[in-house]
Image 1 (cartoon, rainbow, N blue to C red):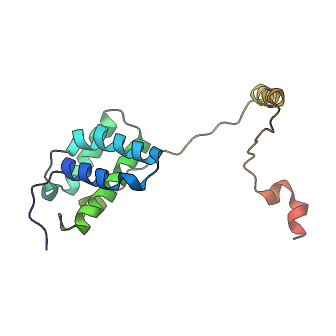
Image 2 (cartoon, rainbow, N blue to C red):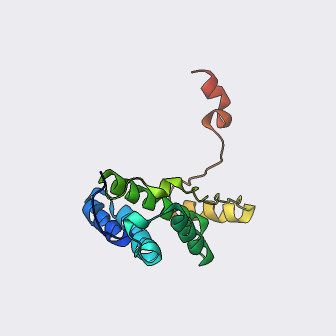
Image 3 (cartoon, helix red, strand yellow):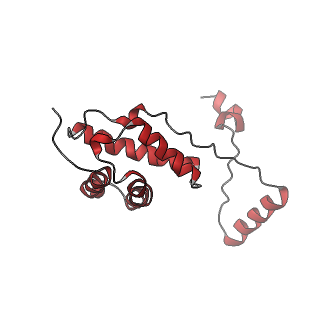
Length: 153
């Protein structure tokens, strides 16, 4: 049975954040605070929880992208809003989580570029001057780097 309430998305997200912030490390807490107070509250914070619909959420995501928010950031907003509304549904403030009906925004893939020879040389020289071992990621598995060592195990 759904609880009678006039809680808005903003009020609920604020309460949820305050009640759970002790569970997260500082970086997570700061990231969640930023997503809630910089994006969710200004965007859909005034919507009453029971009035939150799939189309409202989809339009909200579109507005974030239109304002220049990266696809990855919109995806992060989606994950946090879904988590927050899951809890609202569990607490019976809403009958179901409308965020779960939305198509999940796609975060762009990270693009990597290989280092040029000069960049690699400067990196190795700096590591040598600092007296540290350089960390080099080749993208190869250990078996590809040392195939003989792995075949003996």
